[in-house]
Length: 266
Ligand SMILES: Cc1cc2nc3c(=O)[nH]c(=O)nc-3n(C[C@H](O)[C@H](O)[C@H](O)COP(=O)(O)OP(=O)(O)OC[C@H]3O[C@@H](n4cnc5c(N)ncnc54)[C@H](O)[C@@H]3O)c2cc1C
Image (tube, rainbow, N blue to C red):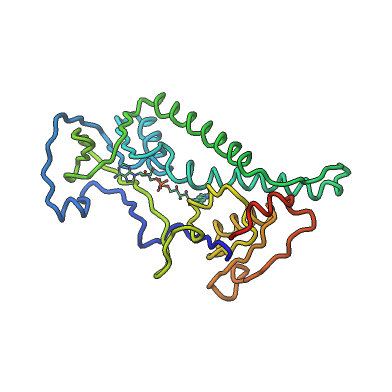
């Protein structure tokens, strides 16, 4: 059975992103949170979430001379850097190299594609992400943004609490991002994955069904196609170029036998 990638990563209604100086986190409002705290820091801006939205806000605010605290529970850079734009573009680049090898004769270059080494692809991808992550950490440090690692909770209209530390801001920016959404009855496990798991796949599947022919779905479809998989995109929206459900034939110089058999679903 072909793996199914749920490619649509976000749903507007589920995007938990807002910039507010007045609102309470619904969880806090519901629970009427009381807190044990041992320190309070005051800033012009406290930003919850260190993804593209959060860190861009932090850097710009610091540039304008404001004092900034940036709270991140995972890795600085968020989805785009670690699970989104950057790793997918690295995969697309590897896919382009594979296509170039296939089509090298067109350019008067004699090359053959022997196969796709997914471990090598991941090493390349992870190297790109790590380099940019390091650069971003340097930028945030140089901007003298106070970077606080940990899960933040909005506990008052101007205060975020992280591991007992209270960060109070004249302004509070909530930039907590969004997460992949599934379909009713579709459990994300095993062969059914979101873009997040697809980015970590350590083999080239023989066949892939991509649900959602938007930008992200098309990118993954393109990557797997170039890596030699049979790809079908399923798109609900009629009447546009996004609506095609297409099965592409395997190219004659697809990945080597060993790569193919290693990746063939059971
Ligand atoms: C596969 C994929 C490919 C994409 N490709 C592109 C592309 O090519 N171009 C493009 O423009 N966009 C692309 N996107 C979209 C892009 O990644 C998002 O638009 C962007 O990451 C949104 O940034 P954000 O800061 O709002 O949220 P995020 O990047 O999700 O950052 C939110 C951060 O908040 C942190 N956080 C959440 N809650 C808390 C808390 N309570 N305490 C502390 N920290 C918290 C999270 O850990 C996370 O790091 C892609 C997305 C995906 C999934």
